Image (cartoon, rainbow, N blue to C red; front, side, top):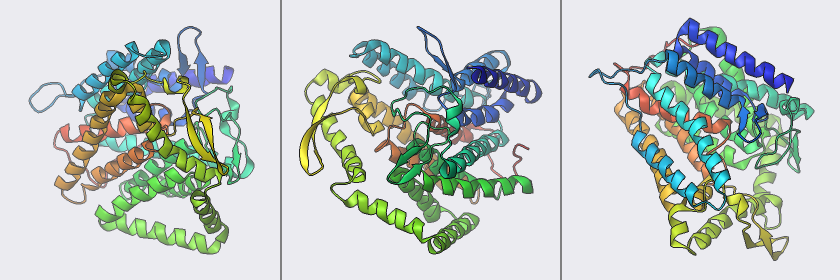
Length: 462
């Protein structure tokens, strides 16, 4: 507890000092960095209220600074900047409250909705209202890469020693309930660094790696460029060490988009990364063997990996069957965060026979959204996510080269996250969710900035 208090006080002091020195907008990159860096275990339990995580403390400090120091950006017509997707987000929030009123676990659902409002929607609002300079956008992207790179240092230590930085904090039960030690399976140690699960860490890595590739030719300072290259190598090491198939595929999808639509230096970097990967596979045949073994286990009918893979498909059938039982539940679901309290069971083929198993996990944010907020809530959430991605891709197509690359990279980030939503509980909690909402903010706010123009010598922190 003492460590958490010291860290929280340091966070408050850093944010306030930065706001005094650089102005409120100048605190946003630092806040982005800190939101990703701290684990969920860095929290103070307030009995009868909520858990004050360091991330929530950061948001509360941002709210206070915004009230006293924030200045909303003005558009060309002199009006205050609009919040992108604002109406859809308000409709989703309202529908989540409707779902909460009909929840099978009202108190838990209410806390879940308030948590999403505070953790993600308020930062989305603040960032979209305040950001007025392209330099701030670049600094926020750099902050994400810097935070994930530092997490990758912790991950490298974890991979080769088994020590996890989360062990410094009091253990906190989560939906994955893996504790604070290293996650060891037949695949060896699966690193998770400060994240709640190796898959969540892998999701953040799948988003940060394209951002690093984008930033390398932009930075002015040679030390920053060296930091990005070192961070990039560490991130590749860590995403392999997570032992998570979903993030591997998400990264391949993301880099594939950059290779297909990218130009010039980005393609050269991707070819260099591919060549380096091929060299590693040749020099370290054990890496290829482990990847081949994981793929073979997925294809096998009796392995843990295969059961995990098939389980995700069964969840979709389960959601359809449960919602078909009641029209009202199909409309508004069972209430946010209610899935784990429904006591569901289903037949599942395991160890060569069909068993009736209790459903205690939901490895799909898509299924969770449908079950907990109904088809209406899911469609509203999907509309927000798809509209952000579509607008970003259209801006990529409209922008002249090489300035279009910014939008392409953020579009690839969104695709990677959306893909993971289909097979990971990744949407409404964790550091990677902060990345998604802020990246959507950046992508949709940037066209509103005066005379938008990304240049390849934009200043970054340091």
